[in-house]
Length: 262
Image (cartoon, rainbow, N blue to C red; front, side, top):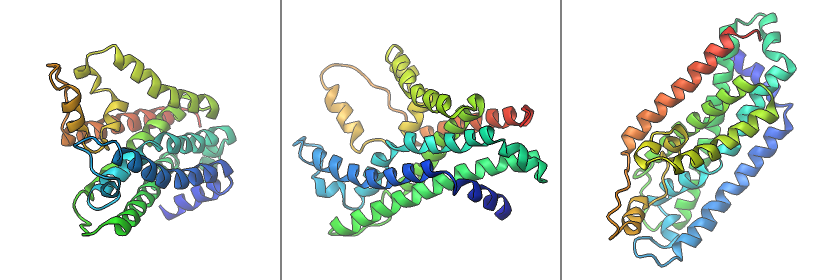
């Protein structure tokens, strides 16, 4: 495993675009947490807390992962670039020539997905911790901390989806375009479908892993007096369905790579 990672790190060090994307992520996530927390904290809606509460324990865990989730598409582009770069430079085939089995070569790609997910999740956790320590009167580190793990699952899901597209298309520009447009297409299709059906679409399911705090209360207020019932899937069901979708994307990508001439 260490040998496979060392090979992947040697390739990644040469990709300047990845460093730029990571830098954008590291700047924009804390900025969005502050900006959105300030805006929501000054909306004067009765069910929303103050800005300081958004940045305090235990709410900061949930709020930070929600804000960070907006950049999972950006981080998914990293997975697309890494994967497509392998096809462009024929490094997958070179790895096999150098003695790696096809299974080990494919496994190394999944290891990168997990590694990027871990880095993103740890960074997000650190940001949440810093905000919480600065703004909390009473420190409760454990309540809502499980959202960090849920966020990790969400990144794995989005990155597996990005990997799936990259494997099918192989070209960086086209893969990135299709990956980004897929979010738009699913939203457009979902607008014409009953909400009870649209809630099971994969990207919609992934997004619900880190919902905006007080979403249920917001829906109740928005539909109050209208008689409209908006279906809300419970979080355990969302997690299970997300993992199922993730496995499907990974298995399909694996089968394509297994049968393809690398």
